[in-house]
Amino acid sequence: MASSPRQSAPSLPASTLPDPIRAVIFDMDGTLIDTEAAHRRAFAETGLALGWPMSDELLLSMVGIHRDENQRMLAVHMGPDFPLARFYADSDALFEAAADVGIPLRPGAELILEHLAQAGIPMALATSTEAPFAQQRLEKSGLLPYFDVIVTRSDVERPKPHPEPYLLAAQRLGVDPTHCVAVEDSYAGVRSATAAGIATVMVPDLLLPTEELILACAQVLPSLTDLRDLLLATD
Image 1 (cartoon, rainbow, N blue to C red):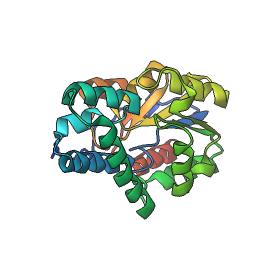
Image 2: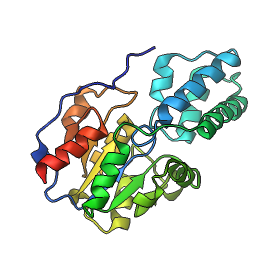
Image 3: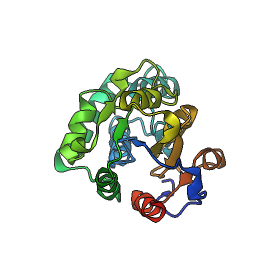
Image 4: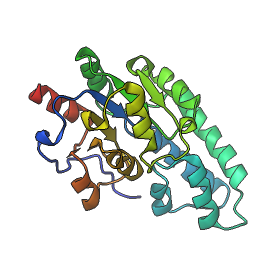
């Protein structure tokens, strides 16, 4: 099992964020809701049950990637005999069972959303999850009312790591990307947001930040609580 990145990470000065911040665009899975870990467990358990164990390296390579690409990756990696349809049916059932019990929020999610709401800063979501599943997940988690705009996989032709999801979210907010902040946990998400010209805060979940991404990000912070504290300190 790979070591968890949920620990302190180096960060850059707060001045690398726009001043003022006109809008904040969040990723959902692994950033606001602990769904990446739930998906990883479902994938690992399903692979073992079907007799196709999956390495940590393979599981981590799928973090932050939309389903179409994950299916392509699995087909290539596992070979033509891999029961792809059965794998997704069974892993989806495991994930939905976990969702029915309740998937927790990431630490500080409600704190940062409430802080931004009270400050009157518009918020959008840019996720690789398709509609209506993204909206349903937000509603079940109690986060849906915070968002003025929701951009899902269903809204774009070119998903993360292409910048289209973030550019569309900024456009729908009516805010120039250079006046926005993006909050992400995955490599694909960080590359999407930075390619859109948005100052990006990485809050790692399952993936440790690489040197490339540390340099690309405006901030790398241990949690969303740290982001709230940073914004409080710069108000």
